Length: 180
Image 1 (cartoon, rainbow, N blue to C red):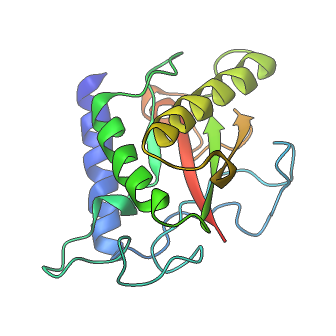
Image 2 (tube, rainbow, N blue to C red; image 1 turned 90 degrees about the vertical axis):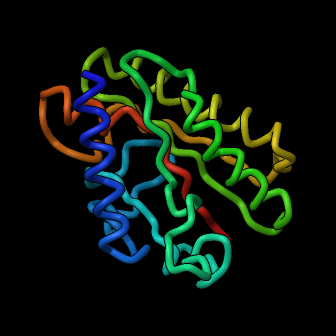
């Protein structure tokens, strides 16, 4: 399972680098469903530096050496039935927190997700626990509580369709969606 996760994350990183920091998968951008988790459409969106109101060339753009910055990663993945944030993701969230703490006009919606296993109600709760875990870490970095909002979509907006470990691992996540 860990080997599959490493391969999937490496592939996703390669995709982000290949896209040059622009928008990633945006399966439900046109659906615009509400924050109640029951909007139309399915899928998840992943924002790049060129959209979502973030300045190009800033902390979310390319560095002087041309490498993408770590802050371009706006998805935190979780283990099965867990809401604990792993150490690598904590380091990433610390960078997001430092960025946000200096920009109190910016806000972030933390969208919690779960895979399809478990009841709908359980997965809504699990997605909420995951979003709250990310929220706590950002608050510890100096982010103002009013900058953060959380929503749980549970299993309703999968990043990928499928009923195997690879699909499930990509659907267990919290997405950081920057808003103005």
